[in-house]
Length: 633
Image (cartoon, rainbow, N blue to C red; front, side, top):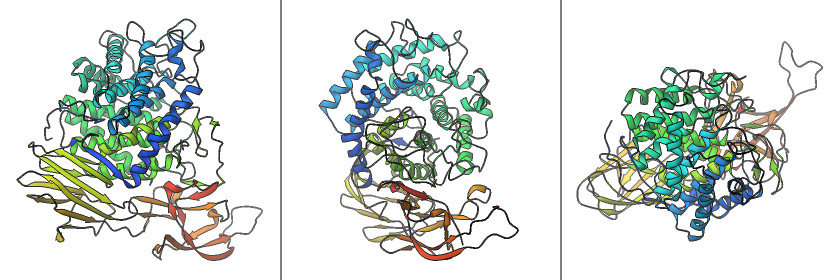
């Protein structure tokens, strides 16, 4: 592993700041998304989603829970036991947003929320609005379901965000008192236990990275070492639900509740990097790689069971029952990014891109005020449209809703969009690496201290041409490395019009760059059929269509076309003339008294060309049916 120095600059706006790794992440002050696909979504996040989240949390009393603890609000706590965490994630999202673009009004709002949070903290540092006060359940009386440490972990991450964008130290002071309490309560000689929902682990490591306080790293290591000893109560779905069935070092794959497993994996990567434990790093990388190979949907979504929001067995990936929670996709981005920084393996950037375009972009409505919790790949009946003021109960599975009883996905999406530019590029020992393609301006310092600037412009993902112009360069050669997506066979690169060799997972251009030099990457964007591993029983005999980074789907607004009767001709390439279409037919099968025969029924067939749309666009024009995996003729 190539060693990189710990950055002393806490104001750069980096969600993850490892002390070593092959790659050094860039912050909000170094990379700015300036236009296109993601700039539009960042603007919507800033102008609508953050305010929408605050309005609902105020209306439901989740923010008021903090003031109630000091006698200034409702005497009755409201919301689920983990609702504190949504307020913390909202503060984190707002913090990254102020790092992206200064906003005095937003700063005042954050200060108000932080003051409320600080006012609810007990003298010994404990912080949770549902436990430990008169009339409430005792502290840490239900570690399996209480979510106390989980909420603390999100608060620590919010405090880290405030610190890294140069905000007030008030929340960081709250975080340190809370972390000190956790270390006293759960450290050596304290409670020998873990939380039912991992999250405290990455929070403690990031707080260590900000403060340099060794006990926070040690406590994270202790929580990871305890995981897998079945100290939590038995659960109807097994100890794997809590990632408490097998010690971390002995597990082969991620299992159980998907978000829990992925948050734990993110914390383990952080721990391995900071302790220099390369064996542990490779163990968790292998677990994630096996999960990608056997337990991940085409969209990058993770979690195929609704009943426990969990991974199922290898290759059990039903399209019509896909859970694929938005939070699981975001957690997978967290793991992939950490692994890429640590190892430099570009394939993890492919994973991030897949999830960004096909889970994150799908999750949020065009107005920034409605959301998918789960992400089916096959909608058989018409989706509903909910009024703007109706809360969707339960854990999702229905239409985009303005709010959910368990609304973790909204704030998670908001904090990811606000910090999105930090995933675009990084610095390695030789120069600058670009991982994601978007209109962006990059101004940073190379490993040797030289300043460089790069302007990236593109119509991606609708267009495969990505242009780069050098805007700042000091004398001497350096390397510009551009990710070549796994699907991009036939990609080309030119430098000032001259073709360059292209091979492997990166296109590498090394030269003494001068201001005005132009590099153009051209990625093939023709639509292509994708076929599933034959071990995925649920979609055997089907194909999907992808174009660039986008998964496409067939959609029938108003249910006009019966998608379950659709068959496509996989021997004829998809066409892309004014929109992607596939050749196919519908087959109307006869009604029968018994659905099993010695020979399959034959019905009336009608040939047609089927228009496809990006999966992230489905159900935006009204109630619709949809399917990603298409049976073949």
